Amino acid sequence: MGIEWKDAYKIGDPEVDAQHQVWFGKINDFLTATGREALTLCEMKMYQYTRVHFKHEETLMRSINYPGLSDHVSKHNELLLRLNGIAEQIANDTLDLVKWRNFLSAWLLNHIAVTDKALAAYVDIVEQKETRAAGF
Image 1 (cartoon, one colour):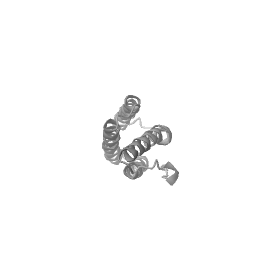
Image 2 (spheres, rainbow, N blue to C red; image 1 turned 90 degrees about the vertical axis):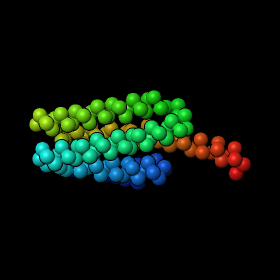
Image 3 (cartoon, rainbow, N blue to C red; image 1 turned 180 degrees about the vertical axis):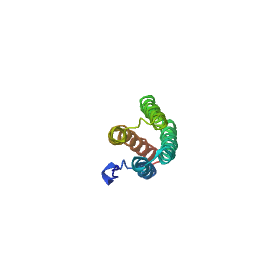
């Protein structure tokens, strides 16, 4: 059983929203994989895509001098460490998919609803200031 994407999870940035949808897919691929080889491959793809997505967000935050950058990056790094734990558990045959499904869905939905929406709100403020400064 996977994590279902809903339009309610959109934060208003089309690129980030599209990346979140791809990310849900990578997580769902992992959660539905069976066997060590498939789990390992899906975990690697999930981890790699997570890094791609986080790099995009972190570049955006730096470009607008986002005041929550440090905290946001810290949350990203915490998840990456947790994802490394998945790889270790697969290798040791100690993986608990139910535990990881619950963790990943809770982390992802909370991160989008709270952390990413705060970033989106700040992006809107910056864009409004730029529009006013340009005289539009």
